[in-house]
Length: 161
Length: 118
Image (tube, rainbow over all chains, first blue to last red; front, side, top):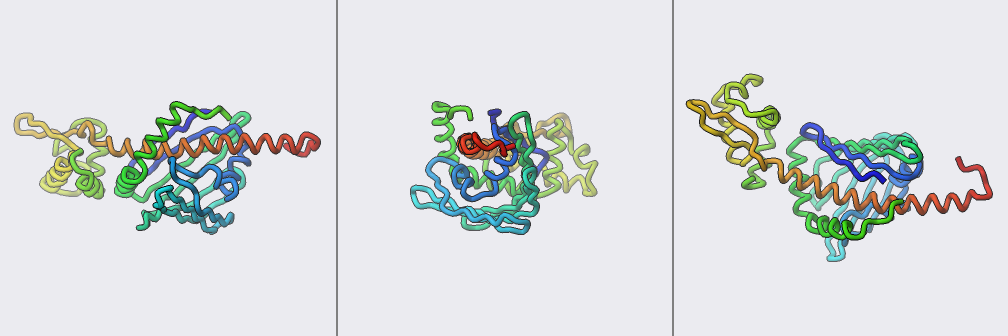
C-alpha cells in the first residue's frame, strides 16, 4: 500500500494520509469496533492494548489504555462528535500521562479510492504551545522504542496486504 | 536549539509565533517585523531577544541594523516529534493492513456461495 504521509499545516494542524486495500466500510469499522481496534492500535514495540472501550454513537466515550512490558501504562480518553458511516469520524482525544494533555481534535475521512480506501486524518491542536508540549512528550515517551521498531521494520518489511 | 523548556515558553506567545511565521519567508529587520503589530518597536525587540535566547532565531550585524532569520536547526525537535508520530502510526497501519487482509479473506470465503456481498 502507499505509505503514510504526514505533514503539518500552520501552527496547529497535522494532516496524515494513508491508503488501504479494503473498502471504506472495512476501514471505518476497524476504527470504531473494539474487537478490531485491539488488533492493530498498539503503537511502538513493547506496548500492548490493555483497555479498549468505545461507545459507537455521537457523544459516546472512548477510552484506550496501553501497558508496557516494564509495567508503565498510560491511557487516552475521548468523545465522538460526528459518526457518518462509512465516510467520516470526528472525535476529540487527550492522553493521560497521568496528567491530561490538552484535547486534540481529529477528523478522519474514508474515501473510495480505486479498489481500496484513502484515509485522511486531520488533527487540530489548540495552539503551537500544545504541539510543542506533545513534541516534548513524544520525545520523552517511546522515542527510543519507536526508532528501535523502525530499524526492525526496515529489515523485515511486512508483506503487502 | 539550546534548551527545550526555553524554546517551548518562547513559542507560547502569539506575537512571537507570528514573528517566526514571518521569518519563515526570509530574513527581516526589526521595523519590518514590527509593522503588522499594534505594539512598539522596543516591545518587538524584547520578543526578538526571547526568541534569540531560545535559539529559535539568529541575528547578524549590518551597519546599525540587526536583521533576524530563523535558526537553521530551530525546528529540528518538531521534526523529531513528527518522526516519532509517523513511526507509531506506520506500525499501527501496517498491522491494520494485515487485519483487513484477513477480514477480506474471511468474507470472501463466507460469501463464496452467497452473492449478497457487494
